[in-house]
Length: 207
Ligand SMILES: [Fe+2]
Ligand SMILES: [Fe+2]
Picture 1 (cartoon, protein in one colour):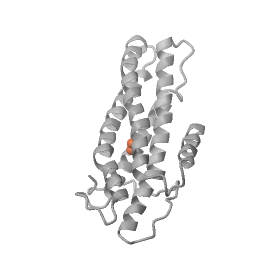
Picture 2 (cartoon, helix red, strand yellow; picture 1 turned 60 degrees about the vertical axis):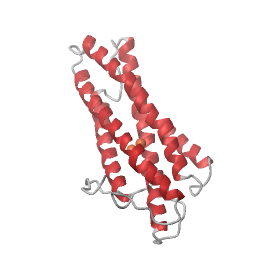
Picture 3 (tube, rainbow, N blue to C red; picture 1 turned 45 degrees about the vertical axis):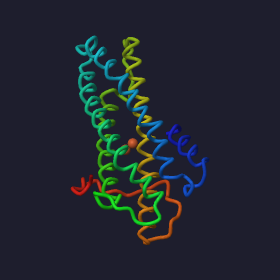
Picture 4 (tube, rainbow, N blue to C red; picture 1 turned 90 degrees about the vertical axis):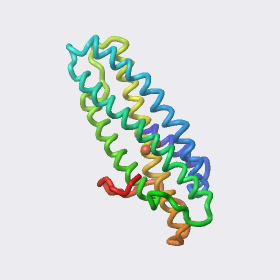
């Protein structure tokens, strides 16, 4: 949580939320967090394979951890691709446009609903990993690879919390407000950093 607060205050120090631009924030998320997921995932997968082979019989929960992590990481790779190809470019268009922006899937609210739904799924998978690993606590007999694996999973989890927080509570509300402003629904003002409400149901209209 401290890491999360530090990261948010770092963004706040860049300026008010009015001046935290949609494009700059989405670029920052890609550079820091999407890159981290890709790199850390690439590190964890072979480590998991190795630790499962050596210790899977003694600690069968490792095999469940491997299955959940593989699913989570695969889902996140696709999720980030959707953000980078669809949602983030649309956020930049909203920022740069003086008139309403047309999108093939309608309002920016549609892809945002889909991303929120996928964040909820990822959070659920992370909870399973926390449970299976006892909050990433290695057993006292753990070898160096085992220790490295749990530390890497813990780092992955912490970064993902920050990553999803920035999107859920900063970027997405800012994009929704910008779209409303372009549509003349409300005056453009600073988005609230916290408290976006979202429907947990998957929307069939989402991209
Ligand atoms: Fe993301
Ligand atoms: Fe996301």
